[in-house]
Image (cartoon, rainbow, N blue to C red; front, top):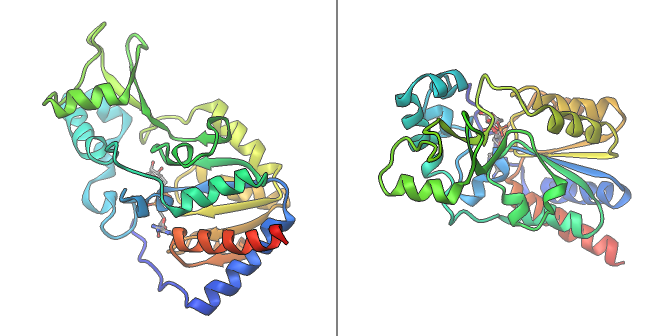
Length: 269
Ligand code: APR
């Protein structure tokens, strides 16, 4: 399933909507930012469902949990295609990540709920305890047999030294990045905390997600159903567009930067 990108909106419309979004943020106390792969594309990490994205080039069926544990060849493929090059250490936050971190510095951010596993929100300055990583994180690798954990940097070195399917040094078990694969359940505690936060915020801002992967995609609806105002910043349409009070068809970096500039004027008086 690929989503063609809508035409980004014109300058005047963007400016007007950024003003309205800044006004909503100014008047809100508990903001949840909900992010997907689209918040990291300007950092050079391809998303999944845009033309040219990951699922435009690879078949998601090859990347399920069952296949990963069932076949060394599937593990080789996942390590090589999904992980080895996607998250090199050189990947840096972009203006959208920094804008969300500024929301936190301004005392506006309740938390970030992210589907991403790149830890760029933390790198941009959002405290770890304010980032709910629904799909896990690439910072950690764990052994599915003995539970031993490894820092990803250590495993990456082994990959770059030519090891194709890294195994556990202690028990030779299967090593898997601590990310949720298709067919694998989300960590319960994280999802229920995210649902609670969505249901108790006053403003829910979606940045860069197609909102088609469940259960994560339920969260904007939980927020709206609990009375929160919804803002969506996304280059293509989402199933929640009609419920958004403000819908911005623009690149996350540009939209968020403009919103934060307008917020700064309101907050600094
Ligand atoms: N600015 C704004 N929107 C963007 C940008 C950008 N710079 N770049 C991409 N987008 C939009 C795309 O138009 C698309 O609608 O971001 C959205 C990204 O959607 P997906 O690629 O589907 O990513 P995501 O929503 O995070 O997918 C959820 O699916 O494959 C699984 O586990 C994977 O966490 C991922 C989940």
